[in-house]
Amino acid sequence: MILKSQVEWVLHCCAILSALPENKYLATKDLAEFHGVPKEYLSKALQSLSQAGLLVSTLGPSGGYRLAKSPSDITFLDVIEAVEGNTPTFACTEIRQKNPCRPKGYCEPAPCGIARVMWEADEAWRQSLRAVTLTDLSRMLTEGVPPALLQKSFEWIMART
Amino acid sequence: MILKSQVEWVLHCCAILSALPENKYLATKDLAEFHGVPKEYLSKALQSLSQAGLLVSTLGPSGGYRLAKSPSDITFLDVIEAVEGNTPTFACTEIRQKNPCRPKGYCEPAPCGIARVMWEADEAWRQSLRAVTLTDLSRMLTEGVPPALLQKSFEWIMART
DNA sequence: GGGCTGTTACTCGGATATGTCTTGTCCGAGTTGTTCGGG
DNA sequence: CCCGAACAACTCGGACAAGACATATCCGAGTAACAGCCC
Figure 1 (cartoon, helix red, strand yellow):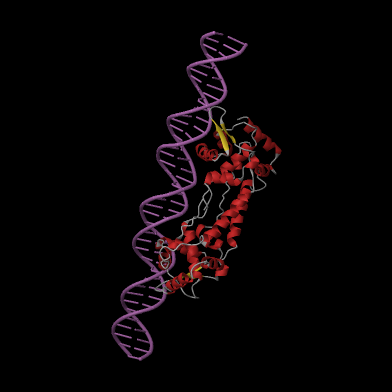
Figure 2: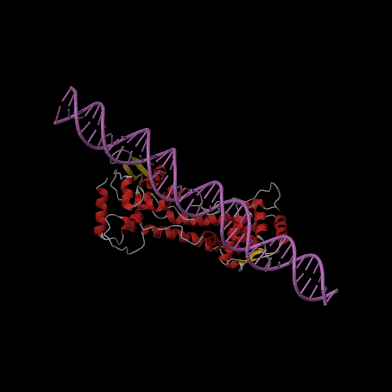
């Protein structure tokens, strides 16, 4: 069980988009070039974010993506679920019902105990990811980075908006 | 991102094996039949548990698997990692190093902030799974089940040890 | 000079191949219980 | 009747296909900026 590589990509992209001025757009092409990843495939992931209502897109020259809401209103979980889907990591197929000793038509009163444990762990994971917003992310990613590099990167991005 | 179906299978199998008397073995064939899953494929998962040191196997007639240690010493995480592998759910590929503005040879002082957040969530998930043992599982799975069904299932299993 | 229109170049979005991993199946090496023969 | 050895059947273990999903790529519909023309 491992997350798609797209998850890493779009999180980095969101960090960049968080730094953008209001109503400015950045194209997939530039985001892909900045991170050294395949443009067309990154595009698919950004489409998912757009459909999830996290990004807004614009066509034509100087088009691209921008955040749909304030960075403080977008959590890691939002981004990850947009890419990975929001299905639980554990799917209970109710194999206890296959028990040959089980009387026909018997109805289980509660969810399977295994599923409950797995879902609880899943929820702990989600809770941890819900607690971090893009605002936090920006702070974390800029900490300890030389100001010169930050400035240069910012200019690189602004030159393409 | 979704767990293998094998995870559900082996957890149910471990619950059965927890109920076995000391030094009694149960064959893959019977475990597969009880749960209504493909025998050969379940076998692969049980092999993983055996290699991980959670189960002990014996060959020949009346052979099969039994727990290698006390049910209270085996956690959900042990079982899951045996099947899924113990690689972190998030793999950081350090795409920040692809930043075109980054001076050559520059060395990052700390792990990427995104990776830190993801690993923390991963650890929360693991911690939650580490807290539940097979002893807890047995209790959960038997709660609320009619005693008649429990008795019948127990006899079904014992008839094949 | 200002406004309108046609063009152009650039964007996203979905449809299309390829590789890798999960899922499923098969067969062989090895061992244990059984049975049969001999003492 | 007891013991030992050969047999047979059953087990796990690893090697072998098929399908699903992640990865990667291509092309078309649509739009915004721009340039040129008319007023």
